[in-house]
Length: 193
Image (cartoon, rainbow, N blue to C red):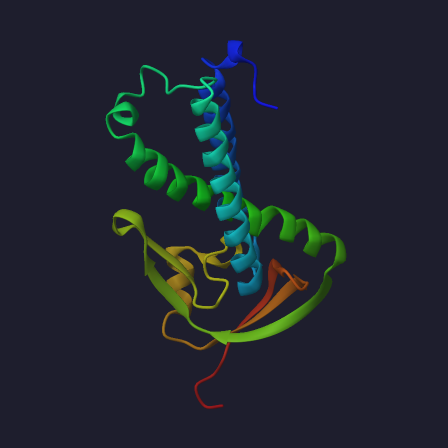
């Protein structure tokens, strides 16, 4: 059933509120979770995100056709070029926000509840990475380098720079991904071995 006509002026507020919650939960997931999803999990989350976004677009088109929703007056850019904003800007931002949430929260909970905890050993080096606006960050150069647990300070980077390092990681793994709990041990390998 479509939303009652007395709410048509406020429907955009609900959409903005949901979108804001999605963006905030994306930030929390990227900043504080030490979780890496498998490529298959990423693929399925992307498909689900696209389907949800298409469903939302079709819902708003149907509401507009029945006169139950119209773009707010202060959305001037949207009113000037509605197809560009509806078919490009909104889906690209919404799909990415949904995708990050779907690749983090459900697989993380599944891994936390059903995963097996074990330790693995990785040989790597400390790396220097450029981010947004030439921000330089330091981390161990592994598949988990974007996780908060792998970040290094500048002094730690100088200690491990250009030296092979063996990391002992404590992980919880499942079919959907891996949670990196901590770096249990860092060993600098000698050059002679």
